[in-house]
Length: 418
Image (cartoon, rainbow, N blue to C red; front, top):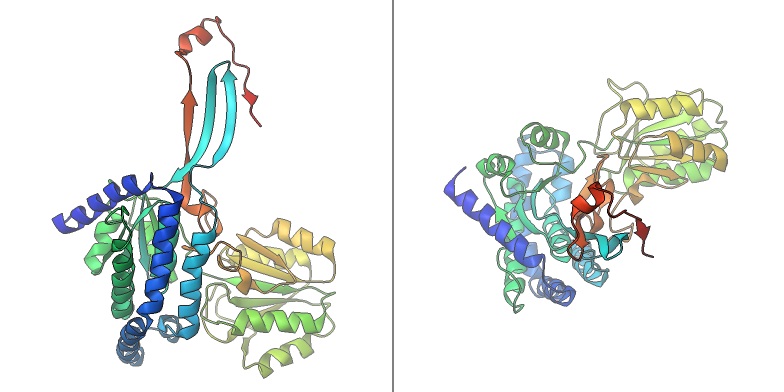
């Protein structure tokens, strides 16, 4: 590991220890100042983004980035509005640190508490979307974590400017720790980050399948994220055609390059208005593919695979075989069949008569998210504040020793304190 990266990592570790013990009021003051400075300096951020977009057009022409990556890169007034509001929303949320998750009297005078605490140092590696920096920085501050961010080369001007504004804002807040939010830039820094298990506690990738797969295969640090977004909508035999059409069109076209956009449509073979449904999708400029080369394709554009299935069980089996465990939805008028679908589909998000595009931390009321996890440990689905906390056990006694219990002089009574 290079001296430069080790210096950054050590500074982040020290910052994580300092921010772990600061007040909710100080964290909220820092977040409000960041939102305020985004407002003040938004034109500078837009100028930086314009430079990135101009350079990205050349990369797109050369085939070095995809159209969906180019679309994620754009930062407009709407995204800026959401970025600023997201920071303010996080400031208004309850502090997730120091919450008592359990309080139990093991014996008279011997009390155990399970208390939420920060994870420590987060390593974030992301592609394209520059607003990721504001989301993750705000969540890290509110959850009392330090963070090291590495963005893609295609967004370097925007991310540098956003980072500059964030740290300018934090410098204006008295007693706020230094080095809580840091940024690295080179490809070598990614390799160094993945090897830095001495200081970094969790890696969170935000990007395509190749990036996430590379990270998971090249680090011993726990990784939180999803490799791909192969989302499905299953139109059951009793579905309302207008509802089905509205949901599928939204799930595919509202933001086609998003990881929660639908990629495969499954239609029950007994659904009587299938041709009408497919026609409505084509009128919305969706390209339909009935026999794709593979069923696990993440198009990231207005292309949709579709398939007829003979039963709800066949739909569930297809999703559990080819899906990525992200978000899958059923459209039906039968609540019992919907419950069966939601119980048996093995995904982080399972929906009934709703678009897969709702899989988002902001829409869930988390304020923002660091990403969507398909993991089955620690955090799953859109990961907000709670997903950036862990817990510790605090035991308070009065000279208690284990030997008294081992020899039968004392006995545990394990009484929960409500």
